[in-house]
Amino acid sequence: MRVVLLGPPGAGKGTQAQIIAGRLEVPAISTGDIFRANVSGRTDLGKQAKSYMDAGDLVPDEITVAMVKDRLAEDDAKAGFLLDGFPRTIAQGEQLRGSLEDLGQHLDCVLELVVEEEELVRRLSGRRMLVDGEWVQRDDDKPETVRHRLEVYREQTAPLSGFYESEGLLAQVDAIGSIEEVTARAMAALERSGQPNDS
Ligand code: AMP
Image (cartoon, rainbow, N blue to C red; front, side):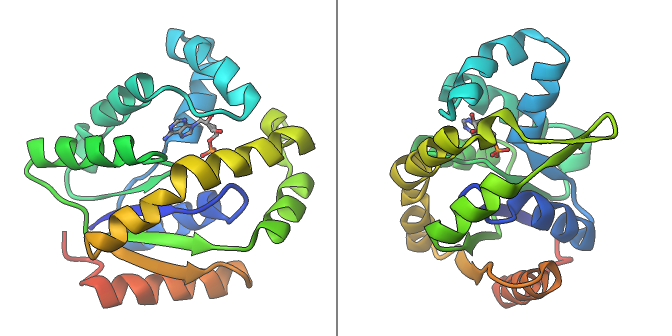
């Protein structure tokens, strides 16, 4: 099954992506994670992406789209995938459709995690991640950057909801609740959209 997970920063995309991909037995492909790994590894890609990420801006499409295209062409993504954090713009959505067409594939479902903005700010400001045994705040989770990332989401990414609705692919999932509740809603939405194990 080929799934896109859409939703604002702080909606629980990363957590749900791991769980849902595990259930579907497909790789979870997170562009944010790929960028962060490249920044830590000080690769050329990481150097190109870092300033945009630190500012809470989107990394330019030329860089991001090529990276995702390569990743989707890898063997483990042939039978299905769950994309987390991509596409983030209508242009990326169109590029994704083109890349999949080239591979003779198409998306089965786009899950949108829905959480109101007040709750997102609360969650992002308190969020920490484990690095070398220590809980640290992501640089882009600082309050100023959080507000900017939400703005970027509203302006550049939220329109994808209508884009996928018009393609009949959108399933909105209420993402307020426990991790298990949200997963259950997402799996139910996927089942309604087709057979989860039908790759
Ligand atoms: P995330 O972990 O998905 O919140 O992504 C963290 C940061 O990586 C974002 O704020 C962007 O700077 C960058 N990023 C991740 N995915 C994309 C994308 N699809 N397009 C552009 N930038 C991205």
